Image 1 (tube, one colour):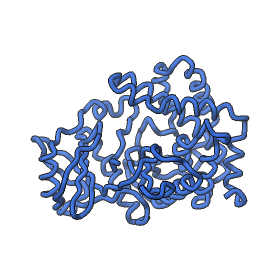
Image 2 (cartoon, rainbow, N blue to C red; image 1 turned 135 degrees about the horizontal axis):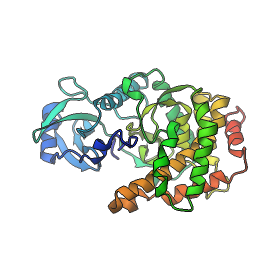
Image 3 (cartoon, helix red, strand yellow; image 1 turned 90 degrees about the vertical axis):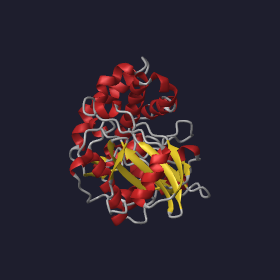
Length: 358
């Protein structure tokens, strides 16, 4: 699995250059030469998928690493923020399953390299192998492991500060209203529900978020960013992709993560969420005010995913099938979630955080 930063979507108008700039053109031969010269790595090389950056997996006698040639349109401050976040976790949570930054022979963590007369920033991190969670089978044990791991990452990042952490990102559920310009991409049957959620969010949820504790969070714990142990599918082998990280209310972390752990087809569609929250709460006790908005954040994040996916499909019709691959499941989950009896989700979350439940 690629241990890479995500193709983060910035707010409309803030990052158009990055979204339209092609990934750097780096050949495998050039990457191999740079790996040897800059890091002293010799081995076999494989090109990895990446819409925005040029990524290569190199397997050497020193281990496996991912070389990321970062898009030249990327904000240098954001590059530094992502790198320093990983380094901070390494210092304050060395046991955590996240990629480790490999310094260059010069000691630099973001060395500059010249490729085809273009200066590029390079970041190299350890390659963490495993099975993507989206290919695995959910279990109570896995949900507990995920909740614990995410809480420990948040604890490691608790005191991390960086000027670029306060960034504008379309995927920031704190500012869900920013998806309004893209609502015309929704299907006619989706629009009323998403609009109703947005209206409720802006009047009832957003004002309360400003009063809740905040810090730097991962902000994208989806099943594609979780690698499971190849032999023990209930053990988390890696949590990757800090490309959407930012400073935000801590509860947003769970709102985002749990939007991917709802099971509309189960007898109890909340079983994954309850196990996850209980484990997280055991590490970071959740406040009553946070639990009160968590259900709304889960629903809002689902609505955001549906809206942004439809918008991206309109931008890249040739990739429509890939972009919309999770749309049907997410829409069904959102319909099921919003059809639950009023108050049931919040009460279930509160119950999951009691000593008896956990």
